[in-house]
Amino acid sequence: MRILFVADIVGKPGRAGLERTLPRMREEHSPDLVIANGENVAGGLGITEKTAKELYAMGVDVITLGNHTYRHRDVYDYLDAERRIVRPANFMKASPGRGHTVVEVAGRRVGVINLQGTVAMRAARSPFPEADSIVDQLEGQADVLFVDFHAETTSEKVAMGWHLDGRVAAVVGTHTHVPTADARVLPQGTAFISDVGMTGSRDGVLGVRREQALESFRTQLPVRFSTSDENIWINAVVVSVAESGLADSIEHLLLPADP
Ligand SMILES: [Fe+2]
Ligand SMILES: [Fe+2]
Image 1 (cartoon, rainbow, N blue to C red):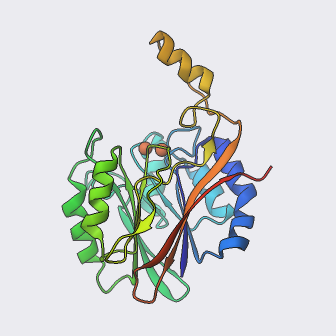
Image 2 (tube, rainbow, N blue to C red; image 1 turned 135 degrees about the vertical axis):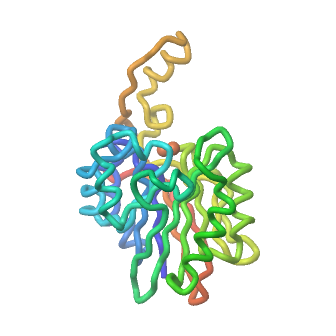
């Protein structure tokens, strides 16, 4: 089976770009499952029920999140109710939402797990033992496991790849919005990349309008940020998963959104 994972979709320009381009990506890569990181989907920060439903309507099957999960209070009940959206599993147990989910596609049960780093980021528990306990918990309940590790540093992400090598189909990094050139299948069969990148404006600064980001850096005064809408690119990976539940290949896609 083939899994398409789309990196952090930033704001309306990111959503619109993905909606225009997803049909072509489907034709070229025939994914059985589409997973997308939606932590920046609502105005660049967080997610709402409305924007989550927009992603489902365009063909996203499962949404993963990150440090901006709880930006919009009115999404909290939705995170509890909707099984196709996950937030980092190592957040507080009492916090809204779930850290993993299992969906059935192409006759196989796919467990989607979201974790957050703790280097230069905050989470309630270390993602490493958390990953162990979820992998154990899903034994017999899922045939394929896919991990979105939302973390700041490449070191923590590379370490997670080695930690889970041979136990999950893929560990893909998100959060920095800058793609890394290290996609590969690790020796025991786990597809890995430190950061997939983002789905948003290449002419801004991590999705923000560049003149605003520059003003902030130049003046060190508060600046109101808005989402950049120039030159939208899709950053994604396609992971091909063998019968064994481990990866055959990972391909990094960096492409301009359809006009
Ligand atoms: Fe992000
Ligand atoms: Fe993030």
